[in-house]
Length: 252
Image (cartoon, rainbow, N blue to C red; front, side, top):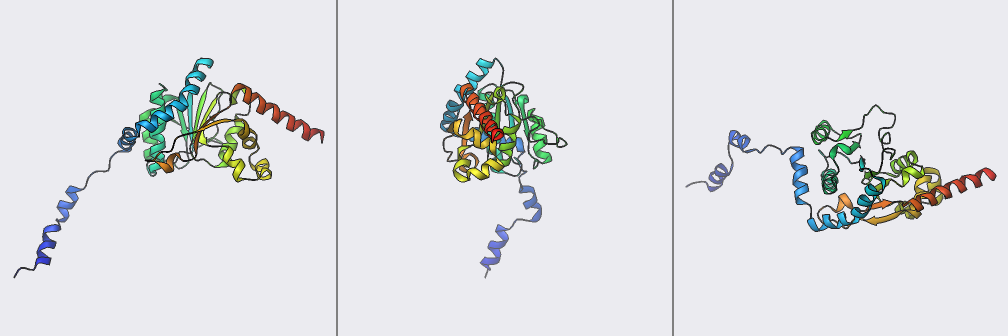
């Protein structure tokens, strides 16, 4: 009598040599990014584009300059699926609005060698680690309109970026794609924000904010992400309020 258990086990268990031969090579990071790009929900992407289009088209036209892109706090595309989705989205947006990848600068201390190799292939500039503050060393709008893509960064980094851009000329040139600033007003006391994030506290009430639509495919990558900007009038008002606050402090 044949022992069926042993016979079935022998049939279902390939040799080590065969198992090794059947192992598929891990797809390259660039191919994984392209796969996500190709798989992004076209309806969702179209709605995101409609939110961004008026500001990007009008901003570039009014200032007669192309947008630069600064991407901070992305995470590691090699190790994080959400980071891959966020990068795929950013590249897709650049494609839609004819922004060259060479216009993108990025930094995150968790970038791996494979991440850096990917950015090099794409022509994206990685900010140097040896800067005193690589997260904010080039996160300004001195060279024209700037998209600041900062998905799910912490309050401290948002504050630092606002601090280095706190002039009327810079604030009106920035298009933020990041956490909704007003959430910090709802989730923190005024006293704590006055101490830890005074610029976030100042800008949140006056900024125009439109949330990205919900992504059923990537809910964790794009939840609480908004497109935000200050019009010239709003930026002027924010700066005026800040000056008045400083004046009242000096008088007291």
